[in-house]
Amino acid sequence: MRKKISKFICKELLYDYLSGALDPQRKAKIEEYLKEDPEIKAELDSLETALKYTSQLKKIKLDRKSTRKLRDVYQKEGQTYYIKKAGKRAAQASSLVAILALFYFYFPIDKVFNYFKRDPNKIVIAEIQTTGKLNTLQPNEVVEEEPESLLSAEEDAAQNADHSEADGEEHEVRLSPEQEKKLREELEKQESEQKAATEVEAQKPAEPVPTPTPRKGEVKTSGFVYRAFISTETRDAVADALVQRIESLGGQKAGSVEIGWEKPNGNRYFHFTMTESNFEILKSYLNTIVPVEVSKSPHPRVMPAGQVRMILEVQSP
Image 1 (cartoon, one colour):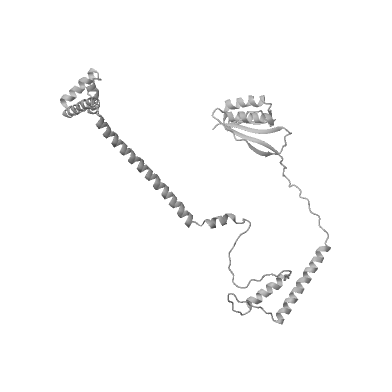
Image 2 (tube, rainbow, N blue to C red):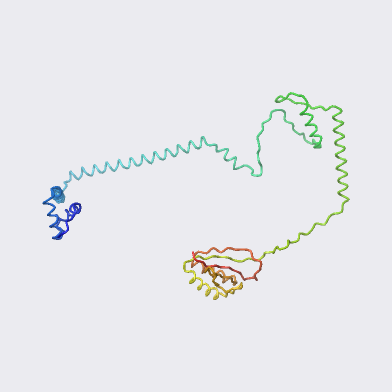
């Protein structure tokens, strides 16, 4: 019993049926559908009519008049397209200019420039505006410095005195005879104490400065060691190749194990020394395998001039 094709496949094969590209078996199945299904028959007729119409279009020829009309239409459409495109670009440029103008007029550019021109070593806590008389020094005028204790006492007396403040007015602070006497006694007492302390310090012998000694257990580190790690799926193959390469460059083991020693976890361990020139060749060789980042760490042992120490570990990802 032959298998019947679906309605969907039948519709897809209608064009091949009309063009004669189907094999006899599929052609027979489609003809069965055409006898049973009027919808398929109507779709076939519509497709056949469309094919006939398209074949007739090949025979159409345009005269010069029709060609000119079509050319005028396309030229007008092209001009309209370029006009719209130019207008769009002009609008974008105008909006950008407007934004820049607003930014220039309303953005505080002067403050920004002043901020970058400021001295970073100076810190402005607050800006205070004062009104009143400006005291200026005349040429050859000497300003006498007053002791801090006298200034502080005068400030306390000025704060405790009853007075009224007003902008632009000058105020005089007058001390009573008792307060002046008290201030003088305090000043004389402070001067005598400072003088006595200075004499005592001058009579003391100079104490020797103790030399710092290193703490117990501290080790002075002046040497260094290069460290690197390689992570690769072909760990053992890469490690074996590295052993041969290091030995060919004159590398010698620096620890208690051989170069390329296998750890209990399977990683391969390299601790060796070689000349600086061959070490640069080795680094270039390592980067041909995988990108390697070589770090530098302190080490208690100092290598001779022209020799370097390296610890390398090859592991699986």
